[in-house]
Image (cartoon, rainbow, N blue to C red):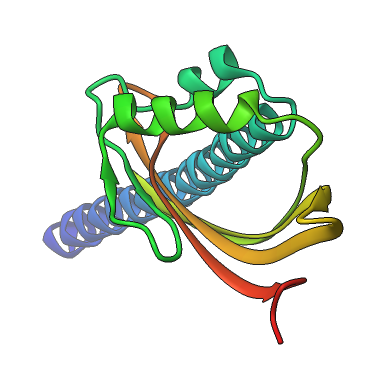
Length: 172
């Protein structure tokens, strides 16, 4: 009988250890899940902030802020309708410096959706570009612009800008 008691106590102890470990593992999994959700939320928030900063820099013709959204390693592709691809931050900035010097245009933006991963994401925007007069008439170009961003050393940077015209005032 004494042996059965010892076996029972031993089994009870093992059961206790197993339950304690299971609860601890479950709690750790829950903490890990919450931590990942917080990381994802932070990633989305900082991604969105970078995209907003970039769009506002274009709207405000602010070359310094625009440059701050560019990848430090020079990764960039600008893809515009009826234009060859422009590669690199320098080409992107040169294009925008010339464009920003043009007077009287506006650039209205709206972020339609974003998809954000751990190190890469994409933002789809609607842009309406307007000039009060082009060839004697008001001009507009409504576009969808997609932006690819890459997370590098903890910060998000624009690495691709692809514009596609939907409707222009010059369309027939």
